Length: 258
Length: 248
Image 1 (tube, rainbow over the protein chains, first blue to last red):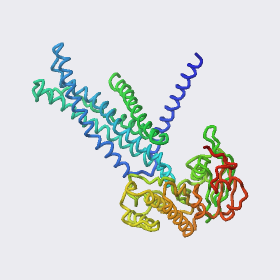
Image 2 (spheres, each protein chain N blue to C red; image 1 turned 45 degrees about the horizontal axis):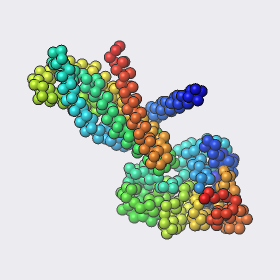
Image 3 (cartoon, chains in turn red, brown; image 1 turned 90 degrees about the vertical axis):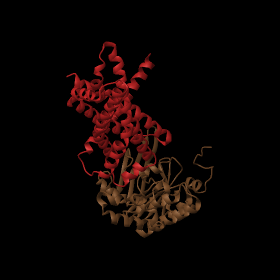
Image 4 (cartoon, rainbow over the protein chains, first blue to last red; image 1 turned 180 degrees about the vertical axis):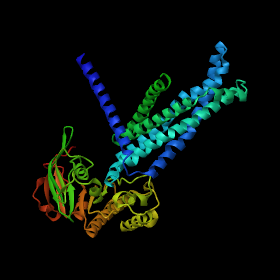
């Protein structure tokens, strides 16, 4: 019994210590926002890698999700004669919830893993030490540009994903469910409010911050060798995904229940 | 001049440095030898501030390194890492000119590229290597590029971490000769860590042997063979039997 309690206590303490380290890492990152030097070249490279190159995967995910959502709502709505709600529910579902969450999770899979693997490899091959000896702060040169690029590009990715998801729902609605195209679009526009779109984009910004921060954190704290980098990559994707889902619940509480 | 006074560093129960005292005179080439895992890299990284010692003092030209302005302090140093530690994402010339394109030594891009190509020539590589990426180069070429990066800012102090590891004997000889030439030409203070005795005899003015967390023996390289110290004698002659325990 005492042994089990001891093990539980050690696990909890280790978890709290990990949370503390991530929070300190996050506050150090934010602190560097205000302090020069800045590395615009690294920032724009990160913007392309994280934002632009994630567009296909986010777009495809949103497209198929929008289509599937239209089919599901139609089938569910038909049980109580509410098939007409398909355009509005697809729009609200995509913009408020599925666009940011699925976009965030796809970017977590694609970006958190690649950041953790890249920085982890840099660590085990002493490239991070080399940066320090060349008078360059790795937090400024590696972490800040990636975190900033992800925080700024995710809202745009989410907005584009929302539009593509709604378009997916529109195609299914018009071609498979016999909706009138003009009526579908009018319903979508009428029911959607600016606050829905903005809340989704704010979620995107928070998720972008989480994805890049966790990727950098695990990369910087990677263990030795291929196994260490592999573990860092896996941990980055798992933690970023869980934090995105947890943050999504908290943000939804803040935006829509007050 | 670099002075280490009573340097201690432990990782958990492993006391890697247990009171290291060592002086390296300005313009001299000091080679630290010792078996694997004796703390040579920890010693070198402690001087650079990459590892914070638990106890002791590190003085460079009389000033405590923990009190020094970090950027100015590091601008005096060049470092050749064991695996090269070249940045994969940058072409060779930008690796070499990394320090010259940012920070206190920053200069225009054209000038930085010109200096990078000059340093490439200095280490025996042709200018057409400048636009290649590190992954496209052989191990020996990567080592030379890393050497070029170490000397790009004309540092007063250069550290070499296992400069010949992973190279064939001929390329090791080439790198050893290059290091010696560069150190003499630049008049730099050099500190090399290695267990390659050919490197020791080519590069060193002075030698120090690290064993059990302390400096076991130090003196001019010419005195090394007649030191009378059983530890250094066993090490330089590569004998399995002696006071240093060999794990079989």
